[in-house]
Length: 107
Length: 117
Image (cartoon, rainbow over all chains, first blue to last red; front, side, top):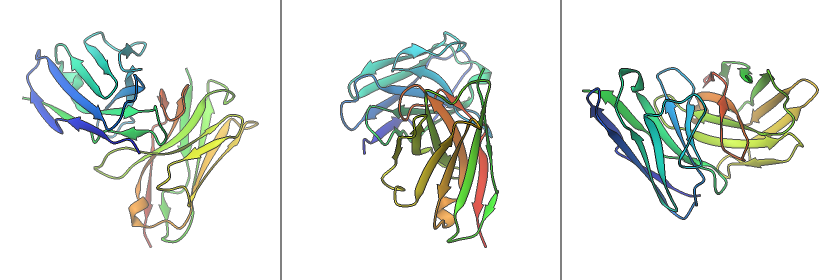
């Protein structure tokens, strides 16, 4: 299985801050990477697909970049409603594997 | 807008078989990959497996010996069976739809299944 190492595991930031989460794959996955947002008690929601494409309806403050083994997810200006846990997931090789998640809190 | 809804028992006894169904509305089950993903309480996400509308399947090797996913296109449903469950199988189980195998663009709300006697 491909291991996805996500960091940090938790993050505290202020409203308006730029927030960055990284995800590293244990082998080359090209751009076959999704980013999801999960709010407490809710199902995950797809934000970014194919590493850098914004899902329809997702605010433009969210972005993703990277290819190969190293990927970055960015919130350009943190909003209160962005409080959630964020997960990366590779789908280049089966089984699709997720990062361990980054819990984002407001400072 | 497609909607997915999981249904099934919320409590299963150890050693028995967990059975869940996902009903798809607002779209056809034809085309797309249909996955099951689970999340133990307070933990991360684990992909269980998928079925393509044609019936081809792929399972996580860690669960392969215990998992069966099937599809009923006439009912716009797909199902999960997980046999010989233990407390470690206690989780919220999600069904999901993807254009690509193992990816998940649309999710059900999830259903908590507890394994306990």
